[in-house]
Image 1: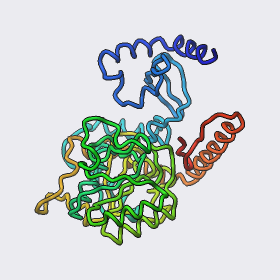
Image 2: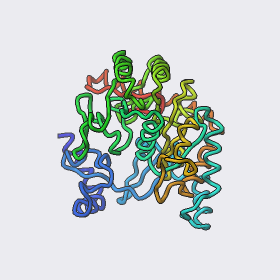
Image 3: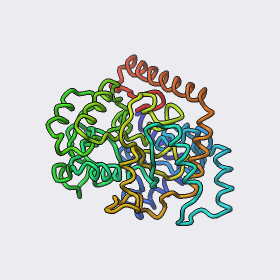
Image 4: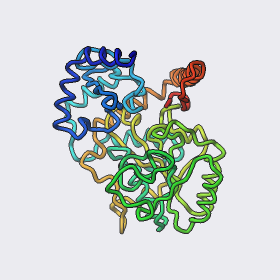
Length: 371
């Protein structure tokens, strides 16, 4: 009864969203452009909201309803929505034009600030999405090792590319989509984080393993954290067998401190994929790491590895908003401490509430990432 009453109230207060949803269903598959953005509301007979503005920690929909934003733009908006300094950067940049299809000084400046403060990044290549970044990282690893198989963590999310969209949905599924090769054909092996059997798998397949890729915290897989000792040994074993270790830091990069999470761990992979925060809320992806691996993509060498061939690679506005955001974060140590502590406190309080009220839910996460 309570749920029905709340659903009725929700729908009554959102007539414009309802109208847009009904139109969207006729024009877009499922009515959306990203599957998660239904937020499962149609399953219970409702519809998602349509947002048209945001400020700070609040979203406002087309009907004028305001929401506290716990989604944070897919974890990309660490400064909140529409921060004045970033907004001013965008305004000034647009007056000069926004897409040139050439090199710009901004890509050099963003590369410089990322490389200077992250020891594991010797060179970097920009693209437009994290999905591209992980695909290119896998390609670079296969090229330099001349090996075929990529091992990926179960539940790990590395975008929807054909290379890595396997073992995403739950521990039993091999893939979440039709239209893909089966994992064996695709050269994909799954492993579980924090499991001793993972190292047996690496040893057994070492002659064919090009790379091991994982998120240090499974951002799309329930917020489970790879334990320090597991990551440390993973680094040791991949070095032992000449396997490229890839950290997907699209979510964790610049999330907990003014750099990559690997710096806090003091565990440096061979390649790192980045996105979200380093674009300051604009579209971005990046692959960085060992110079010898990244330089395979240089057009100056014979038999180059093609990565980052998109129309909007190095998009000027993304470079500028990313640069401004990172500069702000460099002076935000007290704010990092605050949001990290608030995240820890929220996680603890949520689980206390669930336990006290016998709700069969467990919240997982680390600092400001909560699932």
